[in-house]
Length: 326
Image (cartoon, rainbow, N blue to C red):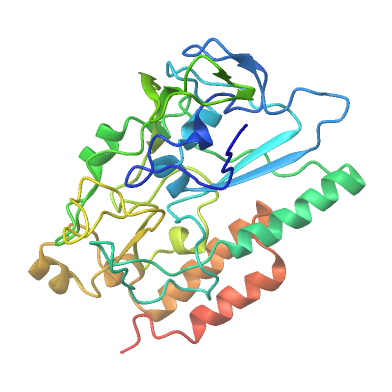
């Protein structure tokens, strides 16, 4: 492709109609795309195809058309090949920073209206790296795919997500996600490359897409649900909205997430109008929080999404934390 820029991703708030996702395939299995008519797949050479782990965050669904890996453009589920595992770090943002047990205090981004999160998905990656090594070298099956799906109701239309998201005081919500439309770069450019003669491209039909369903705390119900989501100290999302000084809030704020801590007590949350249960309502006291972390860490180890060394890090970190101390 002449003048190719393979590194530039497309999102809702910037360079939307760029080349990166101009044509299928989006899924691993070979299939005929119902919108473009293109028959293709990411894995189409069975004799040499590798085993694949795909690990996504919530940001991939809001900004990078993530549902098209498991749902076609007409809203029908797509099977995942047996040499592929799909994993979802629930409610986390793309490139979440490494950190300790807890999501730290909210951060800021000059472009974004909502406070931003800390937290880490590195522990999930570490555990799954071991699982992949065991799969390839020893033939030990890795954990089954743990990814939002239409079949179990954990993928929903964006309107349903937004209608159910809690009304957290002072927090802006997006009005939509990054859509995908089939692009037309002229007759000399096809899905296999060529020369673009139409710039900007013509905009074709739109693909039906979905986002992960959230619970009453605004936390995604499907996926690995790492420690920060299983034992939450606040609502964490994979989306944020633009600061009005930079762009209207109907634009998402790049690949940044949102983090809003829970109130400490019932009285505090009622005073602020926050519908989410407080830390005291969830864990009662510091000991209750430590116990919840220990239980969740054991669950993650048994599911092979956490290494034992990280189990001890989480439990010890919770024990020395200040959560719900007098």
